[in-house]
Structure formats: C-alpha cells, structure tokens
Length: 365
Ligand SMILES: [Zn+2]
Image 1 (cartoon, rainbow, N blue to C red):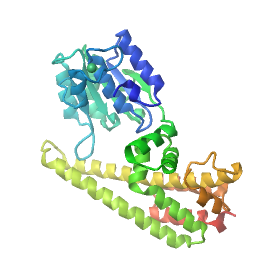
Image 2: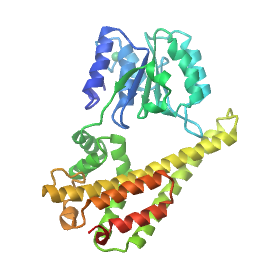
Image 3: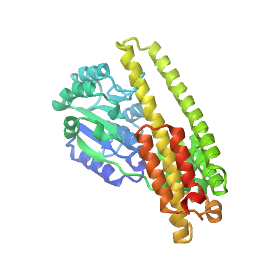
Image 4: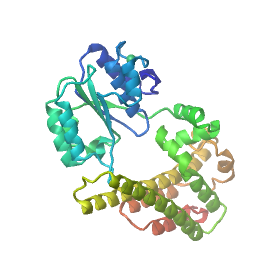
C-alpha cells in the first residue's frame, strides 16, 4: 500500500504529498467527501508516511513503523471509531485523547489521531475536543474523516485544513468489484454506475439485494401486475429487512453494554439508539427510492439515446429493450414526492402504495 494505491483522488493525494515534502504539517486535517472513496485509507497512509523512516512524501510500507500502523498496533497512531449503544464518539473518549495529547509521542516523530465518521461526535464531545484543537500539541496531528462535515461545529471545521475527496470513477469501482469480490464484468459496471462511484454503496447493493428487489418490482409492474399487491409485498420485504437490521443493532448494543458500565444515563442512551435506528431505516428507504429513480431514468435515457450508452443499469439491456413504454417525467416526479413523504415520516406502506400506482404503465401514459 501507499498513496499510489488510493484511486481517483489525485488532488487530495498531491496536497498531502506536498505537505509531507515541505515539512509544514497541519495539526488538524478534515478529510471529507462521499462515503467509500478512500478517505480513511488515505488517513492511514498519511499516518504511515509522516512516521516512515524512508519518507519522501510516501510510506515505504515495509519498515517497522509502517508495518505497525498497518497492523493497528503503533502506539502513536490511534484510530477512533464511533462505538457504544448510540454509535458515537463519546466525551470520555475525547477526554482520554486530550490527556494523551499532553505527552510527546512514545516512539515516533508524530502522533496521529484519526477520527473516523467524526460526524458521530456529539456537540459536548466536540466542545471538549475543540480546546485541544485550538492549541494543538506540537507533533500531534488530528485527521477528521467524514462524509458530512456540516455536522461538525464551525469552530472545529475552521481549525482544520480541509481536504476534499471526490467520487471514484465507475470503471475503478467496477474493477475493484471484479478483483476483490469476483463479480462479473457487466454486473460490476452496472453496480458501480448505480452506486455513483462509491465503493461502500456498491458493496451494499451486492450484499443487500436491494437492486434485485427494485428491478423485480419494476419488471412486474411493467408486465401489468397489480400495484396494490406489489406495493404490499414490497413493503413487507422492506419491513423484514429492517426488522433484521434493528435486531442486529440491538444485539450489538447489548454486547457493548456488558463491557461498558460507564454509561450514566440509560434512558438517554436508549433514545439515542432509537434515533440512530430510525435514521438508518430512513436511509435504506431513500436508497430504494434512488434505485427506482435510477431505473426510470434509465428507461427514459434508453429510449431517448436509442441505446445503452448513458444507462446506469448497464447489465439490463434485455429488460430495457423489452419495456420502456411508460417512460416519462411523471414517474420521476412521483418518486421525488415519495422522497419528500419519507423525509416527513409518512407511513412507508402508504408512500409505496401511492408510488406504485404512479409507476404502473397505465398511470403515466
Ligand atoms: Zn516505512
């Protein structure tokens, strides 16, 4: 590994390499951009490079220091991830980091503290952290990693050098899906395009089966299936997936509870956890709507362009060639509205029922 293994991020990587070469290090860095595009990986490479004996703006990957970072057992490189019932970065975690930062690094030139998903740091914790960030200890570098920088206090953001990461090229995501997950070429390209160049999102599509479920619904509706029956079946399917997700999160939280006796206010923790689950479920629903939107868009584009050149679901030519009689702006608008209703917390069953009637061929002609 090295900076050169981080794909499609030439601008941020060049910035980091220049910083390392010049020796003028920032004490606070904010890596932001879409999820699953290599931000965390870049932070780890930075932690290696800044302490690498052979350093010339890149990490050798083979010296003792580089290997320790790679195996997460370097005493001066800490990666903080959200944890506990409500999956956040808690005040006591920040306090221990603040305490640690008062001492010089144990064995290296730079201590590097990486906060992954730093938007999960609550306001109180951010305020505790702010003091350290305002008067950063020399030889300590904080790397804040997040897709949602706006959830950080402006005072935190302004103390950091911001480094923006972009989406990956779909061809890159497709290549990684083929190489690391054995996914056939045409499917890999389709998943990469639909996932808008976000590796983690493409992988979620592989594992969750969301795209297959949506493609099935769209095909059945095009074939004249009853929208009411289809919407009920779909809502049940989504409900089951969500129940499984909820149960998994609860089990994980219960596990963490056993070794986390410090949780003072159990009621607070419970409502925080419920809020987290709700947010994740809503995000799931948004992803389903996005997949429907991508499909309707594809039907439209396929007809307009007379071929596959601008289509996202690139492995679906047979389906697109067969259907596509009901492509139209009304369907895109209907999905847009459904989006709004889900944001406003309307019942999923009702939103899908109304939507499926509009997606069915007779409604949009
Ligand atoms: Zn090295």
